[in-house]
Amino acid sequence: MPVNRESCELLRAIARSSDAEQMHRLALNVHNWDSLFNLAQQHRMSSMLFLRLVDMGTAVPPAVQKRIRAEYERNMFHNLANAVELIAVLKAFERESIPAMPFKGVVLAASVYRDLTTRPAGDLDLLINYEHLTRATTILLNRGYELHSPTLADGTPAIADYYEYHFERSADGMVFELRWRLELTQPRFHRNLGMDWIWPKRKVAVLAGAEVPDIDREILLLILCMHGSKHAWSRLIWICDIAQLLRSSPELDWKEVLDEGSKQGLSRVLTLGILLAHLIANAPVPETILQRFETDVTARSLAQYFDENLFEAPGSTPQGRVPYHLQLLDTRDRLRFFFSFNSLRPNERDKAVLLLPKPLYPFYFLIRPFRLLRDRSAR
Image (cartoon, rainbow, N blue to C red; front, side):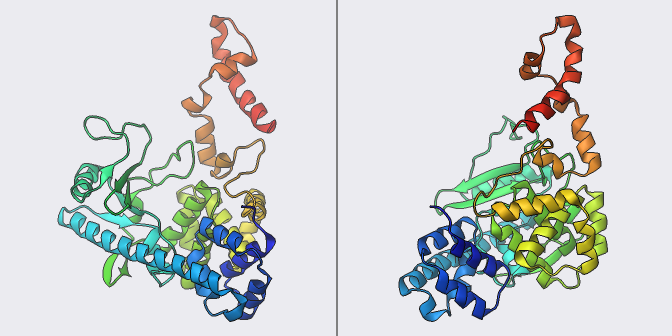
């Protein structure tokens, strides 16, 4: 269903945490409530939509109020079930001496939003050390899950550079993902960001009355920017996550964030995430930090693109000479990609550009970079 301006404006107002008077005025302008409801679901904003419209009275038709309340309650029960299951799995892992860090989902809702019901959660995500993968898999299989990722006979991943196992439990529809590395782009991000990165600085969050491991706020900010950038900022909730983290963390150590972002090759995605959160969700950003990020012309251009296409073409990326996934990388990682053997290996399309006799095949290594740029710029 096509989106309409009134629905987009209302969801943007929710992201900005606009006052009740403005919300009431925007709600009165909505005529296609089906479009709003579908758009809110697509961007994982349905719970926030209910919480902001629940007291709007006659501005929201009774049938619409009933519908969004039902969706809110469905999300609430799903989040509670996720929380119970996550706590049980973490305890099972702890008994087997398997460190595990939950991220996104219900823990993010509990620690950043301070409310388990505010942010919808999909599946459950746990980061573990690769050395514990076999034992962690056995625990989940014993809890009724089925592994839906291809594996070799010895239980190791069947796909090279694959960093997650996907589990599903048919009895209740629960979905679990075990990861042992965080990635930024396709092709793969050439940095091993995993438990060694986040576990030493871990904090504690309270989830449904139980204490669970939580990610340090400075690192969490980088992970949220990394995740949103990887998925081309196709959901408004990911921008709201960053804005809410900044609102709930006035003590954030920006020097540590900048240093860690530079160290891990995440400076560009950090800049992009902060610019988007400030532009779309009115996130509080220190003026000196904002001015620094605004000097990044590429990040500023990307932020403008995603702002303009957030609802009309979510998940799309700008076309140009440099592919989007390369624009996300810092200079050293971009050079590493360009000079990696796999990226420079000629293929049949390169050979179709110019037919060379076999003794001259090494010249295809020189032709390939120009062919890639030509194909990209023609889009």
